[in-house]
Image (tube, rainbow, N blue to C red; front, side):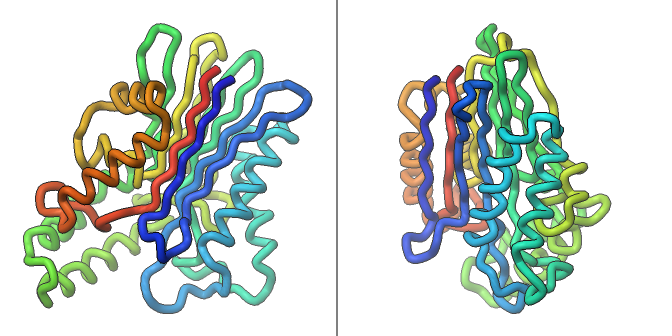
Amino acid sequence: MRIELATEPGDPARPNEDYASVALPASGQGGSLVLLDGVTPPEGPVGCLHSVPWFTARLGGALGELSVSRRDLTLPDVLAGAITRTADAHGSICDLSHPRTPQATVVLVRWDAERVEHLVLSDSALLLAGADGAVTAVLDRRLAELPPAVRALRDEVRALPRGSAEREAAGRAYGTAVEALRNADGGFHTAAADPSAALRAVTGEAPRAEVTAVAALTDGASRWVETFREGGWADCLALVRNEGPQRLVDRVRELELADPDGLAFPRGKRHDDAAVVYAEF
């Protein structure tokens, strides 16, 4: 197999909240890929003493171990078990019912000689390359497809001058509206402390012979497609395959620097943590 990973913080002064790993058991019975994008909390209390990198390291480690050691479990069961294990690691000092307790998006892929299984929760992306050359993007669109009233608040923020008091006030209103939809019915879901979130994930599987490669991207890397519109998902996978994951991250950084204030390409952050994992079977 060919396996390549790249990750880079959005701000060198802050810890990278993304997590990426690949497990290839010594048994030779396939492997698994894990990609997490930790959710940066807002200013203020979050009910937990632990950092987002603490959370993603433990959730990611549990996902890697359970996905290869418990092949009797479905991927939603693996995610539920990993969430429970990580919640237990918090101990009694944390309020895990707080809506901003540490959490993350999830991409989980597992393969063996017969099949390739996948799971996507929230706005990281998974690309599947087929034996026929087609590329399928597996996406959880619930965060992107917010209710019209919330999208209108977002558009209002983007229309106001950067640095203005009006934009700051509109931004707070938009943030509050989005937070009300987090891990709520009719909203979007992330992996936090409730294992039932695993049941909300987008899942599927394909025969191993029909999948030649997979690429997982956090939204800091998928900006190449979704924000900067440099190409489609097939073009993105071709870039990763031909030039490597680091080139995709580098190109995103170049595009961000060319539009530092987000005037041509509106986005929540000038730079974001970015991670890419590529596995070719």
